[in-house]
Image 1 (cartoon, rainbow, N blue to C red):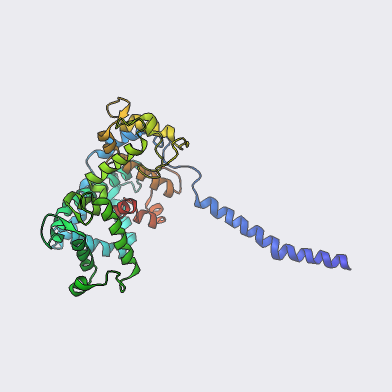
Image 2 (image 1 turned 60 degrees about the horizontal axis):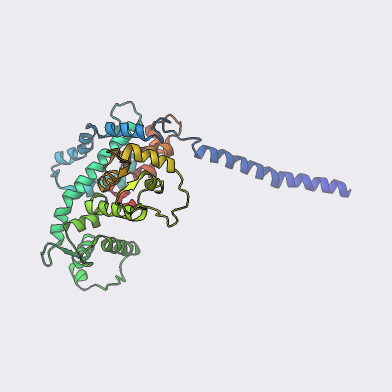
Length: 364
């Protein structure tokens, strides 16, 4: 009798515990395998081959997409808006994009798909991203003078003080002149997100101010608002690289020195232990030979490093395109369809393919 009860108990355990567990882990395994690509969908001849990337860079720089990017302004001209009024156009675009992000992605896809085959290959995607980067940087440099002049008014002396910029910031976020002139410096009534934005601005201001910590000249102001567009900011990145990795202090980087750079970004994760092995150092060597050492003298001087770091270098667009394809190419054909892009909506909305400014400012 006891034996029968034990057998019945074990059968009950099997159905109430073990079977549901087996089903759960089976479903988890299936979902996990479907959520990750089994291999990179970027063509093997492109991935990790700097010589091919160099050839692709020439193609990416070929004119042809820029006018497609500029067509963003056509509808605003027809609506009676001045196409040079970038701030007004941007405000309208932001509202439209927030209201219908799917339509934004669909429109972007159609403009980037230059051969109209309803697929984006790496050439089309990289070319589009490169055009967006170039357009963003040119616009940032163009707008910087107007913004600097508008803020420099108390007094107008060719410099922007922190107080002048802070007043502009508060005014642009809807605060009254009375609040601006007599506010509590702790901003007790301000939202936490705005307080955090002010703290980040203050930190970036300190980095950009090279002469006076409370005032910025025109070029310093560009380094503050758009460091990716600032020649001064890029030169500082070159100096940081040389200071960290120029082991013989000859103000140039050799192939050996460059191969010790971290593989996930220039100027990031600067290691203290130079003897620690760096993943991807062989890829770095190939990159140095094909993409950096332009005069083939075995060394990279400041000019060559500056060209390498410059966001307008096509290699950045190609790498961004590779990244998007690897993460989104569900059928592993090396191209992106519109459904594949829409299935990764958040990824693309925050990428340089769509929101170039936001993507840059998340990096710098």
